[in-house]
Image: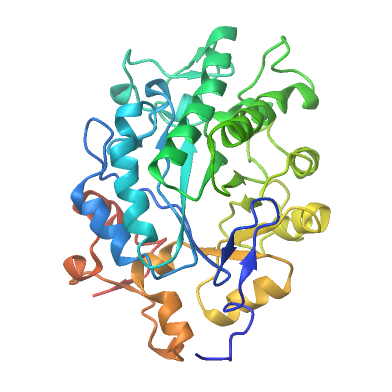
Length: 375
């Protein structure tokens, strides 16, 4: 084994569950658009996961919707009904067959859900405020009962993940989806107990965490990881500020979570809201809670040397998305002293070799500014 990248190859034990992973590399959740129309996983998606199951120690799935009203995009997998458990088990088995730990990311799209994917064609959110996107639908404000039912749905999705054999779940509280919408002063204009002050806007995210944790307590017979993904800021005004986020992560740190996954485009980037503020948002979060809540960093990290630097800067683990898409065996090559052989651009002649499903492949080819392409 190569000893050059000692931090990358060192094991890590999650503090609450006690589960150990054999490296500091995480496969980031990547949308595949490749599930079947009923929410079950497709054979092509299983092939995609199986090809990458040695590429990281912790393997996070594409997000699964917890309730049909929260389906976020075409081809999304579901965790919304017990009939999905065999499908979820198929994913967990594929990810775990080479010793990695499998995490199901659980999700509700809220106002970002497309009308054509919803049972009644109408998105819902904390308030009837459309996203600042061309053609965005005005969502319907959720009722108290819908809020409670959705909180419960996260717990039920966690139960199904446990029954399917996953090693944990990641609560998707980032990237403009429903949990973030409740936390955001842009999308949450409520005047009841679910909105208004910062403390009230935190109520829904924290209630989801409590629902998930209760499901783990009630149903898990083995150690089970619970993580939470967060976006530090919003560009909207009013919008989430780093001060808001530091208050939320402080509250999350008291919830006995295994990790906090900080979703950014660049681990070292400064503020989205103030171009003069250059201090890394991820490092600010690490400074605030990293001593008690392990942080997964992501964004702008491609090479092993950059991973080592992020770990030196306080991240407990580092998630790779594009890198494991392009190079499914990223961790294996680093372990075996072949870091110089890592692929760094998508070979557009090698879809079959990379086992990337066609809907995902077509989406990737439209994102050339995000993904380096090798002709």
